[in-house]
Length: 269
Ligand SMILES: O=C(O)CCC(=O)C(=O)O
Ligand SMILES: [Fe+2]
Image 1 (cartoon, rainbow, N blue to C red):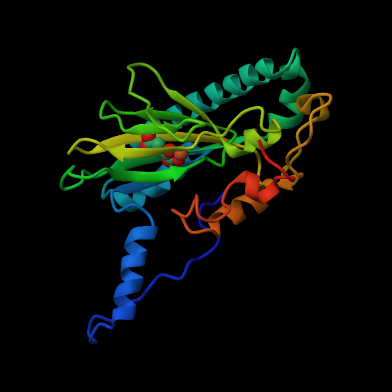
Image 2: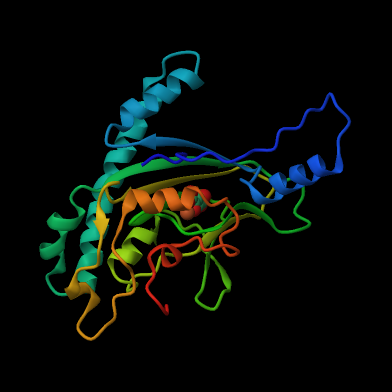
């Protein structure tokens, strides 16, 4: 799954010329609407986490540091095992024997990638600072490690932000859009964000476990359940990923931006 298949029009300012108010406006919009200035991340893709990390390390570091790639290979392997186990348990929770019925037929080609994230500290905490704006993940499940700084928040159905406080030896698992669609909305893709609450760097690792790009997502009849309406049209994963990437980040609430907007049928929950 690639994260940047479509391009957006970035404003270009020629600072050798007098600045017009229109160019200042586009600058203000760019600062407000696009990615947080506090967020930076490195993506490492599986299944060859070593190779992916190594090619970045070669660019980032002067010397060869295999240790970095080896650690990420190990982390990726562990997270892959954990994701498989989580999917199995989630299937069991959806119905008796569902893990046997659906694990191999639906989930065995899933793949993972991770994001190593650094949030730089804001200059002051006078107002609430978002390090990462509200979004849902496009994965089936995401496994998040956050350091002791905290700041991860999830939105309740009523729209209230709740802190997910860091807890030693514990990882956070989010359901993502793909699993929401596959489960016909029985599982809810969590709306979450990161707020910066301390004047220190924040470090996190997010591992995304996703269906293969060319998979068509269609909730099995038995998962929908007798007498229930199907609420998503079948769709191909890569089409949804493209749809999400072609919407500007940050406009989550203003424009249709979720799996409901993409594949929802009629009235939604
Ligand atoms: O940094 C975090 O704790 C969460 C990151 C996240 O939600 C994401 O990368 O999708
Ligand atoms: Fe996320």
